[in-house]
Amino acid sequence: MDLATIAIAATPAFLASAVEFVEATTIVLAVGITRGWRAPLVGSALSALTLALIVGTLGVAIVTVVPEHLLLGIVGTLLLLFGLRWLRKAVLRFAGIVALHDEEEIYRREVAELRAQGVARDRWDWIGMIVAYKAVLLEGTEVAFIVIAFGAKGVGAMNAAILGAIAAGIIVIAVAAVLRSPLTAVPENLLKFGVGAMLSTFGVFWFGEGVGAEWPGDAASIPLILGSFLLASWLAVRLLNGLLPEGARVEARNV
Amino acid sequence: MSSVMRAIWDNTYGLLVDDGQLAVGAIVALAITWVIAHSGADIISENSGWVLLGLVLALVLANLYRAGRNARRRIG
Image 1 (cartoon, rainbow over the protein chains, first blue to last red):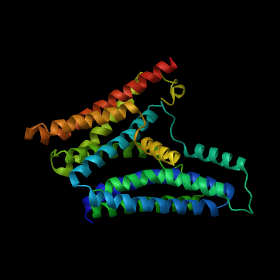
Image 2 (image 1 turned 120 degrees about the vertical axis):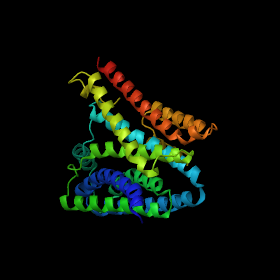
Image 3 (image 1 turned 30 degrees about the vertical axis):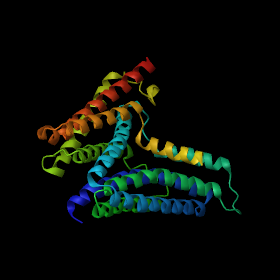
């Protein structure tokens, strides 16, 4: 596996997966601490199996069956849509229009809801298992999507993307297991901003390649495209800051 | 069965689309790029990637500006 493959496939897969794992871990932690660990761990394991199945079947089928140019076009389109969704939300968050993602607040809310439902310690905790399964599956679907998209260029890229996602999962779970609290120290909003720009960059780059565009220096153009997205996002934050009067931002949430 | 399909569709749609206008705009930008890339002239086709980048950046700025104006109207 060469350095370029690792940089292109493993790095974005690692960063994007880390964000998703942090969000899933918050819910699993809330379930484990309020209702006991057995059911949420089984739910998370079942969910991980489901996701492995999705990547194993869909990912391999896409890479082996779809012709390369068509594949680049499809993956580019999906990455661009996915990346713009993240980027838009991140800009609105940084401009104060949408509330910042707060892991501590989500954790507290989840704990309160789970406590309210009560738990019978002598029976299997289906609620705990299903909540954990759904949380890991929901966040994990995005991880699976990213792995398939970044791994679409071939077996080496797929392995690099899978390794990046697994490494992110191991680190996040290990830190959460030690701390036993939501990972609020992870700069999630900033990471989402960067990942949104990165996904959009690869969307433009691969769709361009798919339709026969020549990028100067091939992958060497990626930092330039990424820089353009970051610059445009920074400009957008400044623009929005100028548009909304100071102190009125919280009331304008959820546009 | 239909509820399962509905859930899968909702999840997939939610994965890709946050703002419908931004998503439609992105699809239009991709379609324009495809048309330009297949228009015939090599020089245009080779540079179609930059056209896509320009279109998408303009789209992002315009979409966010609209979101900001909507927010201002809402609080005003």
